[in-house]
Length: 244
Image (tube, rainbow, N blue to C red; front, side, top):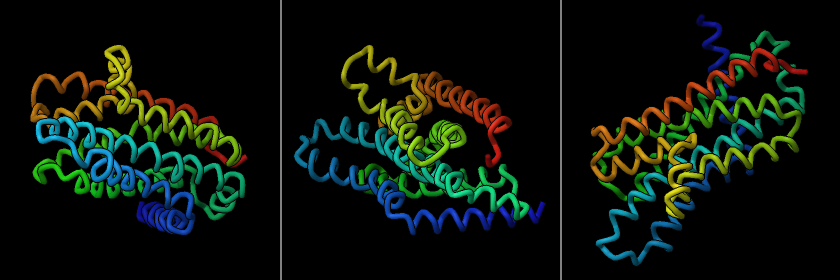
């Protein structure tokens, strides 16, 4: 058990260093913060006071969706396909590292980066600091479905070119809730998307409705997608969780 934890720790450190060293991955991790700064201090700089609450609801819901979409597309999908293409996974497995340990390390690093970016975005938005703890909890669990889906697509992709194709649906699915304002039908579809439950819970948090019956549907959607993506990952991992 201790040996497995040490291997996971070493892999996590390697992945974290790769994230810092790779400019493309580092920039994608910083993009959600940049967009929140753009929204908050440029696009919504002159929002009237009566519309500030609605603006904050939009931003607090959009920030974690943006973070998980951009970060997973690069730190998991792109990085995993790059390691497969360069046969890094084969080298690790020859060094007695299991594919499961590689997956766990990538999930750990990705979630850590997502939480850090989400926290920075929270303070950029400037909402009440008392909302930070539930905000982090919702963002953490709400990100799991996209993280697992990114692992599935990372296992399926053969190389970095194919990972670029798979990255688009990841980003679209993550950002889908932020376009719910375009109409009631679109809002319904967005609410039942992988990040829809997280977005709705964030809006309820900002509006003070998180601990009401209104949140039950959003919670069911969020954990339902986690279960579906977890099952998909297990099935794909059993079939493709090895270096070809």
